[in-house]
Image (cartoon, rainbow over all chains, first blue to last red; front, side):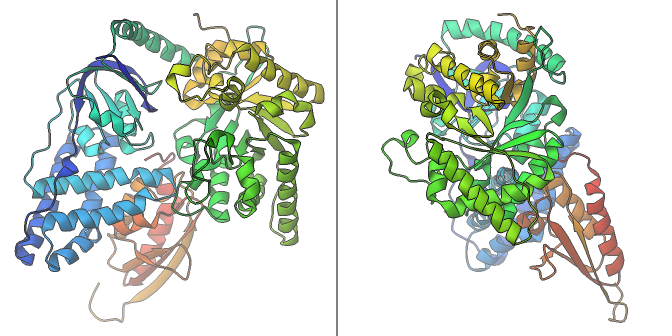
Amino acid sequence: MAELRLTGRPASPGLALSRLFVLGDDAARTGTRPAGDPDQEAVRLRAAIEAAIQQLEEVSGTTAADAQEILEFQVAMLGDEALAEGAFAAIAGGENADAAWRAALNVQLEDYVNAGDEYFRARAADLEDLRDRVSGILSGGEQQSVPAGTVLVARDLPPSRFLGIDWQLGSAIALAGGSPTSHVALLARARGVPMIVGLGADVMTVPSGLEAMVDGERGTLVVAPDDATRASAKSREMEINQRRAIAEKFQHARATLPSGEPVTIMINTAGPDELSLLDPAICDGIGLVRSEFLFHGATLPDEETQYQAYRRILRWAGARPVTIRTLDAGGDKPIPGLTIDDEGNPFLGTRGIRLSLQKPDVFRVQLRALCRAALHGNLKVMLPMVAMPRDLAQGRAHLDAVVSDLAAQKVPYAVPPLGIMVEVPAAAIAIDRFDADFYSIGSNDLTQYVMAAARDIASLSDYANPIDPAVLSLITRTVEHGKRTGREVSLCGDAASDPTIVPHLLAAGLRSLSVSASSVGLVKAAIAGALVG
Amino acid sequence: MNNGTATETAATGSILIEHEVGLHARPSVKLTKLAKTFASRIELGLSEEGPWIDAKSIVKVMAFKAAKGKTLHFRANGGDANAAVAALVDLVRRDFDESHGNG
């Protein structure tokens, strides 16, 4: 079979090459066993919960402190009568223990799955873990045992399951779903097990036994790697180790060119949850907060929720600047009930500022929360997908209106500088028409719009080149306009996180980059000229 | 604790959560464990008007999803109500004895 490449989100760094082991759903069982006498069913469930607590306590005795805390949480949940209340009620109504238990847990799971906060969404995995453990005991089924040293493929991986597996060198985890903030991702990072999440349901269809390579830094899984990939895996492994050493060395240093000239290095973030794992001292600020993280819940976030989230981010950053991008929904980021579903070409459709201007009620709530939060730090606000000077003017008019409302209502606020993303060629080409307080180049979209090649089509990846001379000339143009008019220009696309591309961006005149948190050390090393090849 | 209502007292207290990620897994375990060391009925809410939930139930405390920056209100009823509220408020004030919360 030809090699198959799947891309997800990196959750734990490192590289592994090993046999695949696909873990089927223990949850596929159905609760079709007829219910016994309700009293007996209740006793069965109680016994299964007790047995599950015992199992977890046994595992807990053999693990490190971080894992113990996770297990302690699970044991506390299982030991709480409230967890099974619904199940006992259903059993009294004639349901069998397994079905009643699963249904009761699923109701509670649903609540976590729909949480607006990624941390709480990730707790759904803990509840699933408890559900399946007790359910497994009830049905007397053995859990599939996972051989040591494999690339484990699963829909999601419960933390207690992780702890029962021998993660010898060469092991790795590749999940169809999951989250980098899950407990299991935390454990994988602590144990040095490479891990990728969010590979999509397709990964579940690959057969066990094939060889596969997991690259936990790029977030790629290569099934049945060909000889070339296999050969490159070895050298990549050495390279990763070398790079890790270099990255650690440069991580906390101020980024400077060999000439001694300083370069500003900020980070991109998808919200306060992932920031809590990072040391702010590694960066000069946050160049891009993707505010979409607030919009994943069942309902739109209210002003207070947004205000609190922005404050948390500002508190993390201290005196460092934080640039929050207003909602950039649409394109590849649909939000049910807000974005327009049936556009033939969503990347050329109602996205970013275009959507915000069509939904002023939603836009103004966000601007209000931002102005209130601006009191608590060095906040800047930027508008995505600006293509015409009118987009910026209308955005500013909404900001002005929000500010006068706040003043009239005597609500404390500050007015943040208002900048634009430079990602539509129209903006880059005629940059002098845009009277923004600052410019931030979005190299992903700028590249795909300049080259007219979607970035998710693998066979067109040669076109998706951020250092194509056409793209670079627009970057240079924007940088020069910034210099002429005394306005800050930075770049916040993926290109800035790629140490091989960074020298080209510096050559184009950029002195401010916003990168993924995991690439800060390497980018600083590349700026210092400390990376060879 | 003892029978009879003569020793029953009611106490209330409130405190702002400063914990980095709010009332999440580890803090919830600590809070409910501490609450269970008291005999009084103890409840927590996000406002003085409630809704109130059982502060001894981790399932209910987690489902509450109290984020950082929210004010937690405690109320207790029973012989050791005052001590219970004081201890819980103090736990939150000490940031659950964690400097960095990531779990």
